[in-house]
Length: 135
Image (cartoon, rainbow, N blue to C red):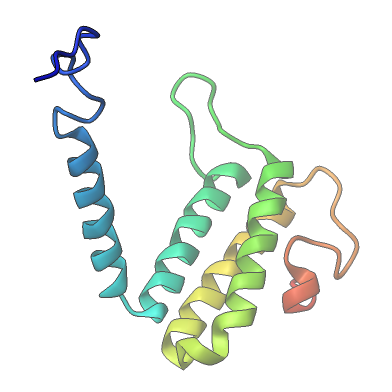
């Protein structure tokens, strides 16, 4: 019979409270949830999130304290990413989804142009390398 004098047997082990198991269950649940969502829905949802972010950064939403959240440098980046996503995925989305997303993108591009103190040159606005000039 051996005796353990280190006390290791009585100390709680990491994850002994079930946190590791909950995290693994959450991850597998998330994976199952994502697996059940169509690619079209994932792309559309991502595009809508990017549109919302771009609208805020263009200054279409107002902060109650400062008056706005405008950040045109950030808006340009988000609109570029959005244009790339919509352009690349349009053939897979189907006409109805793609048209709605393109309309939203165009509205953001026009709002961006209006927010600029000095307009971009034709074809140099955000996303225009993917969509062509927007005026």
